[in-house]
Length: 243
Image (cartoon, rainbow, N blue to C red):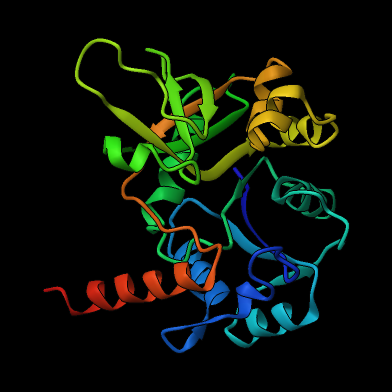
């Protein structure tokens, strides 16, 4: 089975312009993501999908593959779908370009979740977090059914624990899609819940698609601001010096 990993990397980020090229421990951030994806066992090929030649140049300098995609792409999924239109495959993995500490095992796990049942169109991952972390609206939470289908994603702490010991799952923004599902969801219009929460995956749920959720091998840090980058670098240094 041919599975292509795609790393969307947009230069004109609203909160942190040029962040894929931001230096992190001596390398552009996107290169850290690229190396993690290439270390995964389940991908046949890894491509960085970008709107900027400077990002493509940094990727190629590290021996990676980059494709220039439309500057008008509204989301990472749209950028992945554009790559899919040019590089046919059985499935695609959307690896977030702003998560430089993502364990390679997460890529393998999301592929395993997707391929566990041929009827599954989309897969993603989640990781247990504390109630304190769940209170942060920048941390997306997911409620999961017994059969591991996603029931809802929210920036609010879900579920609300009126009874019992609180237990929350952080949604990690890595997705695996079968080719047919990716083609279909890329053509969906924005939905009411998506607009309310500013979460693209709610568009897919509202349209009737199932998203299966696996347990991540480890958490990762999303970089949206220079402060996030500093935190990621501190964590990276900590990992390197740990025995």
